[in-house]
Image (cartoon, rainbow, N blue to C red):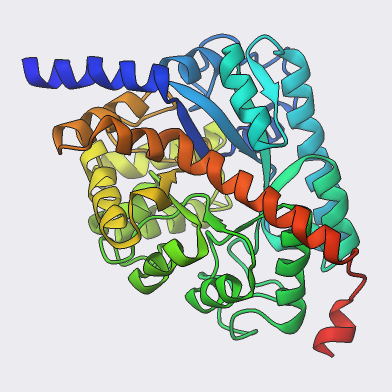
Length: 398
């Protein structure tokens, strides 16, 4: 017990010096669904543990120094409806930052992240989760970048016309010609190419097409838990040459083999009662609670996540791993990582396994900052050589 307490105290000291850059948090969608971004009705400056995984006091307790806020919209929103909803999500993040300027610092660059840390504020960046948010338009991609979006996940759970998702039937065979042009334009902008959610064929095609490092904003190791949302070892092994970073997620159904079938049954229970399987409303969570009472849930822990990080470190190297919890984007979380205050428990577990402070500093902070800085450097070179692409899906894919 003394050893565990010592590790936890040491973990908090390390996070004070090297805070967490978390790759993915769905608080904006939770605010949209619960209160339509009305921060008077859901004030995250106080404890919201009964309603959310995320609030400012718990971010502080968790040692979070930078957060990529997801401006996710559901795949069921298509075409211009998806674009409009993404703009509303971006506006929601801007409202959040304007409301809490003493705690949250808008960040667009690696330098902004470092400056926020020096000021004691949480650097706040945005990531668009799914290529459906641009409606196959490179001009819309550029507009999202100008509004502050610094990564885009190429797909969410469904395919887009130019890229295959991990959780849909193969259609494009990875990336199409237009998909490769999307990657090239993201490189030119300095927008990180996020390969969470995409099929392995899309991962490989995107890494081959990208002149900048890629990220996985919230994915774990397929060799440890054989779920299609996770990263195969050959892709992890390609990250050193690419320079990218794979950010381990905490979602139990992606990290604990026993939780995969259980969560499929729980999701089907929601659908039978007329709810979307990703619904996190109080009504949906009541259904989940009743299902869990009748069908005990397999419990992931911080050690489960550490198993993935140990493997990812072994295959990709310590310079190419990070953390992407997916808080407020999942109904269930691991024991010890119930919310954003839990990161010290994960760091304590890794200390117990012999990780050094230098390696933990790379995991929590410096790898993520470096990958954005490298993408910025590539963009400077690309913009000096070529202007914006005006290619269309019809022109390149027929």
